[in-house]
Image 1 (cartoon, rainbow over the protein chains, first blue to last red):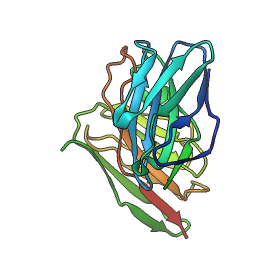
Image 2: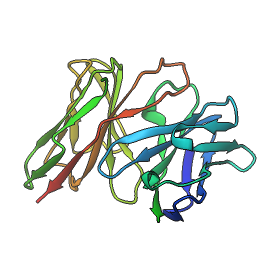
Image 3: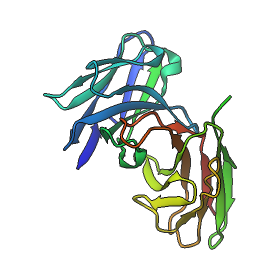
Length: 116
Length: 116
């Protein structure tokens, strides 16, 4: 069994300040973890993924996430927010070695607001 | 450019009518997926297909039907049996060998269905 919890439904930051979007997971297996971003009325785009290589994963647009097994967390961070980062972010967990997306579990999403 | 094309982007339907959402991909991916997205919820899997002429029910298949006659195409029909069809529908595809770690899902831009 697996689950994912995004701890904040909405996060607001000022432009130029750090971003932290929190994600905790539960998995009976060694998981793969993903962060996807969705801009309004668009599909989702992969930001980054963890698949048991380096625990600190770098993604696109300056985002990174750290896999912490002891804390069962995979928080998404960015040093300096930009207005274009305003979007909805989804944390996703999957059992490793499935080769299929049918076992993905999506979090409920965190809406990031960036203000001037 | 390779990608996934969903149409129509917006669709209105009267109660009791069936409607078909189109999904076409030119990524040469074997597996395709249909998700439903409701506000404040994660994506929920409706149907998926890992190969032509084969498809499987996801978590919320009731009231929906699909076909996979061609590798590139995976249309979704929302039938009158679907009790609450108003939602944002996302089509996605993935190219990952079965025993590999789950790869990246590629998404279309979605179709927003409103039942009047």
